Image (tube, rainbow, N blue to C red; front, side, top):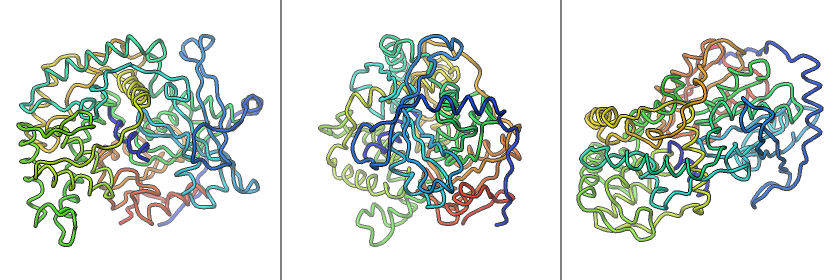
Length: 497
């Protein structure tokens, strides 16, 4: 899935103006929200390593918003209260990426990286989206081989054929229809946005501020489009292309550009003198070496005991390349794998989350990607796209235009994707690294264009996925933190070099 390895990573461990918001809630709506807040029962959160201040509660939401009186599902939320009640202005929801990721532990984790004035201004709120444990959960009961990232990402055969990908899509889709139950048909971005508004109401807040990352930027944009009068300050970090005709197909296609943007940075690092993981003498040699090595592994894989799959083949190397370009801190893993493969060996098999977790994450990811928009069912269409992609972008070998499980998904979309527009409140800041493998700058600029005057964009001259307080820089972090704490944002789009 688009975010399977992002989820695995989470497991493996200028001038400013004061913004004014429009369309306040009515007094009756505010009172209703506050009365709902008293129904929350806060208690200890599951799991270890959490800040002792973090509490969890459960919010009941309709499984099907077209039938609000029908079956309900639980969405588990977490909270760390404002560290200075006098300075508190509301809540900051941490919207996870994915689809298939959770922010339930984030108030204890990345939320504690926020500067003090931001932690004073907000209660930090996390949540496990519908379908994802410990919220009411789903699973497709897949065979272990179908949980391999190199299988879930639609890498074509070494000769470019998509035949096996179509077979895999049918097998996985059939399993999800068999084991996913009714809930798997009601997992999507609009459902998550509506759940978020139920969370806001349950917390008794007239408006909700949010920090959305990766896929969470699309969720945040959809929320602000559906509930403009309930939207506070919104930070969208590492931004998805919001193309309403393709949605997740556009995100997958973004890897073509993202890999081309980031690979030269890896090549410079991997050829630097003094680097213990140096693979070549010059940057220009790294790309052809990688392509030759992948082709060799296509022909002659190396057994890899304990890994899934149990061999290092060309597509497994390519998938590890994509994974390693998410952050410069991951570059050594790719270099070490290349060096080992050149000598006919492999490193120890990478650690994986428990299989039930992978089953759960995979089901939520598949449901979201496939329920949000219809995918083509024609193998011919995918084959043509893969052939063109392989010619133009040999590093990604056609994967970004290939058939995922959605090519055989049995459920048609229940509604059209939400079109992101320039109509709504203007309290949005986009922050975006120039070089991002998963959400490239080219796609982020399309979200910026769609939002128009509602947003400003802070482009950061850094490499890596997740910019704010992660792989960005001090200038970008300072600009976003000031906006969250004070409501001030740059008057115009700005660049943080």
